[in-house]
Length: 426
Image (cartoon, rainbow, N blue to C red):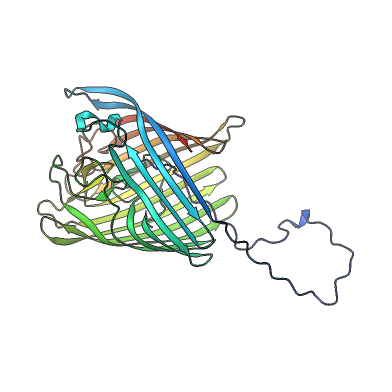
């Protein structure tokens, strides 16, 4: 939901070969010395090995929320504003000639999101979980294998620029971290990834039954979720192929096809259902402009003891229902702004997502996001995210939508909110 760093797009890879003189007009004039009669034997130049590097870091973030469609303690409609602690994230990154690895652990609590009305004591670290922890080996310049709790290879890790992610995150499609093994091949024009994930990332510490985790995962429902299911996702085979249709220094266009097939175990019926998820996207950039368009199809057969048109998911210590079948469409356009002598770089963006549900009577979920990211030019240690959100039947926007907004739908009215996340990255 709130990634520490949310890049818009993958940067264009460098060409496979670089000519000695790319612009003949600027090449130095040839010397008048005659060429030797016998060409000297070239001396092999050994590759410079990557020095082993271990970086330990942290991020401390706060947040400000202005909620135009909130509800008070007595159920009255109101506009509320909150200034509170967001998260403390501890990170470690390792890289060497043959091996690499990374880990991040997060602490939440002591904010209005985890207040006493929700059953929390209200201290920092009351909710905490592992975001990712993996290690890998470089098999060659193009090939690698990674083991651990890691991003699953379904399209790009981040689909858009929002720190809140988009509705793809709400439905457990975007930025998911699961336990498994992944193979990756990366060249200048082609990326191919394939992974096997026996299970989801672990739930760690919170008051929920099975939702104290970063990713949105299929989970066991808490008691407050009506028609909640008791499921677990297993034996996930996930992969993607990305090809650069255009790969120029100033312009890129990449097409990505992704697939996700897994089994869904139901604890109530002791039956095993299935999940099939497919996506296709186009990601491009031209100068300061960037854009992405994606469509995804989700079909889940949860084999529930009750309703099969919805399934419970969990994340950030809360559980809610989503529609089991539907089609998701997402688009974003962004632009970097030249800020001149100002000490911050600026990215502005707008995106829209809609999950169109198959079940009769279910109301589609929608979100429009208009945002800006300010990053300090001096080492990027300070980052400020600001977003204006409009959502309909969106669990994260507006009161009364959380539990069923992504399933049957809420009150089917547009809700508005403004959010600002500000952090210092050590």
